[in-house]
Amino acid sequence: MSKYKCPHDYYSLESLKKYGYRVYYDELVNPNLFPKMLNGYCNEECKTKMKEIYKIVMEQFLTSTQRYFEDARIFEYAKQTKESDLIFYEIFFELKERRKDPIDGIYKTFDAKEIKVDPINMQNKLVLINFKVGILNGKPVRLCDLPEGTKCDYDADHLPDNCTR
Image (cartoon, rainbow, N blue to C red; front, side, top):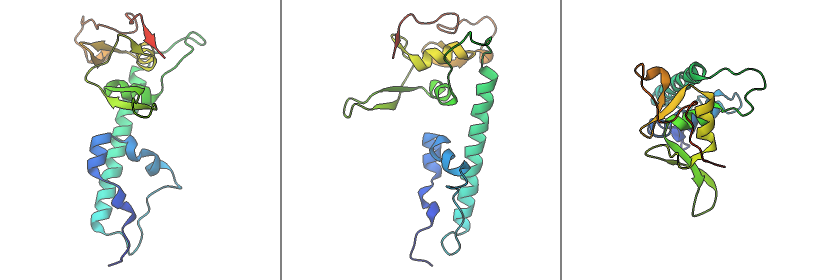
């Protein structure tokens, strides 16, 4: 057994479950960062773990991107000037909130119990405008998942009046 640690010890299924696919995605798809199996350092347990991590990351990414494209609204050229990227869309559904950390003053992502609309932040407002989604009882919803006739508290047709940043 080598005295050196396997380079895959850094990867954990627990972190993946807690933080989602983005925690490892960039490394797993970048050929220069790809976590190679190293002879003498990696074992069957490591190989099995990395296969599972790769599978989960790619499945979560595929699910997220499919939903992103299914929910995207199509606008005429030059009618809509600001767009929302995949991360804004995901954060909207993860009930995450970007705000200034009171300790170091840096904007960070925090867990939230519901989407705040008084005032609503700009990224959530853009998600409401650009996607077929809404806010119902403080929770994010996909309009396609709602029973017919259900009205959201907020959606692209009923936006909160005030906005931050």
